[in-house]
Length: 208
Length: 351
Image 1 (cartoon, helix red, strand yellow):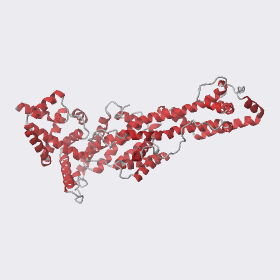
Image 2: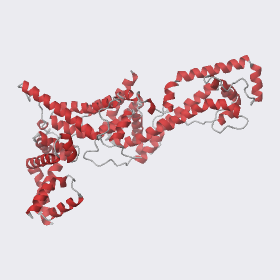
Image 3: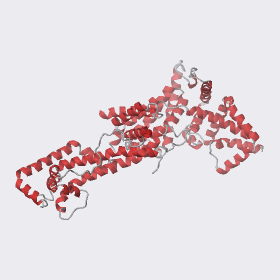
Image 4: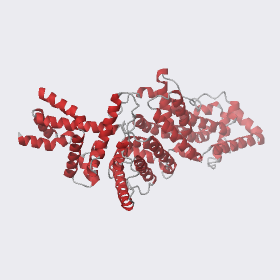
């Protein structure tokens, strides 16, 4: 028998009452979706709410056997990512409205990169590593929304460009060009971090 | 060369993400290997990419959200199950209808009928007891289904151990007509007991096998890490068996009880019943069959199985034991989450 059940098999098993099947699905997708949501909405507590909402929709959909939103015509993963993206977009829209209404916008905003790595955690290497991670986080956060989205879908959800194009409602060349810009910006922002790598690779390339 | 570099750069993204056809990739790679400029470019993009991936991969989803989602998923299960009874096995359907009180009632009625016949017509009973094999003239073949088993149980009782053995063998010559009602009564039970094993437990086991691999591997194994290596499979097998047995044992015990209820006299007359069923249901703790080194593995497998079977109370106890005995295990976080899920699911079911 297939040792690696498909998402669709797992969903069917959950509909038949097996909680473990749902847990397996959750295990597959909660991390990429979490990373995507978190970098999209930029606030942990909001991302956490949305993460729950995404999977609660799956639960509700499974309950609604008569008229499931997911009818099996699309890949389960595509459906799931569409839910996640729509929640983000809705949220961003509402946020924009709220900000337009009130002037104290941004007061509650805690960007990912604002969290300072605690200095009491031993070795310099650890601290340096954390600082590097914080910088990378910052660089990703600084990407324009449409580029960051494509970048995350490609790197975290590991979707091919064609599928990303469908999800974000753009053409494939557009998606690729966003990705190129995103990579170039990250590369520029992280030049010194990545510098060793590229310099080393260039050297080894030269000597070969 | 310049156009080649230009072309190469324009395809670098596809190269980086493995979206080139084999021929295109070979061409681009051929150029890159001979062009230091393109090499530097590719290496820079690759290291940028891997830096970003490393940072992103370190971002674990919050355990609180995971637990909340699992609670909701577990809570929805009773709702999920009801609309699709067709999926349930014969055994679970019977189990639903023939609850213990019903079985007890059937047993009591049988005892009553048997007793009344013995007391009201002692000679007759005695006669038949001596003849042993006399056909029960007054037991009509068309007797109502509910009565037939109970009436049949009388001759069955007198036939004693013989009838018991028959239950496992094809109908035997002269006894056939006598044993038939008894068999008719018995077989559904035997069938349900076996379908309990085969129909319910077996398919779930196979699905659970799949799930185990899935759940066992670190959450979100899909992103960023290689597929889980099925390294611990051999150790889990015995644990699995040990777990499923009690369930089969339960089915067997149920049929034992039914048999006892249907033919109580058999107890008195027949020699000690041969042990036909597997060991008693025993709320057996971990069947520590494997080596002590893999004990936790076995306990964990058992806990996971209980969890998969949605036996919340037992699963919660199992995870609690695991956490107490091995709090430093890498899987401890998952155990805690599942314990949480068990608790909430258990309390929901109890309502």
